[in-house]
Length: 139
Image (cartoon, rainbow, N blue to C red; front, side, top):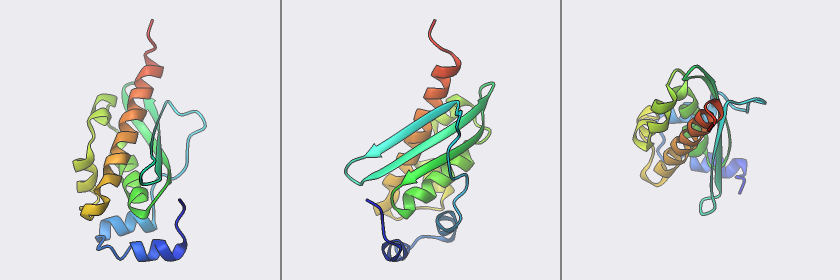
């Protein structure tokens, strides 16, 4: 479900902190890579949020990450934060990134929006697993 501008503005009154508001207003790394080394998607039917994280990898390290998110402001902020956190991580480190680390990077989300950090972290974990599979195919 796509929010109207009025709904998005009303939602930002949920006591978001300055860090989260900055990621909402100025999301980093929006878009996708045509030839990503890994891609991970979380599509939650209950909340109607869909996050896809794309990564480029050199060696075993993520050199860049981008995202496409269809969801609430908190999901956009969490996706933006994940792409910033992902840069420079090894694939195993990216696979271990969790809700707590994303929430911390955003300065803390309201309790009713913490699931957004979990979705973004899970999308990165899936992108890292996909990159690992593509770069080291079973043989």
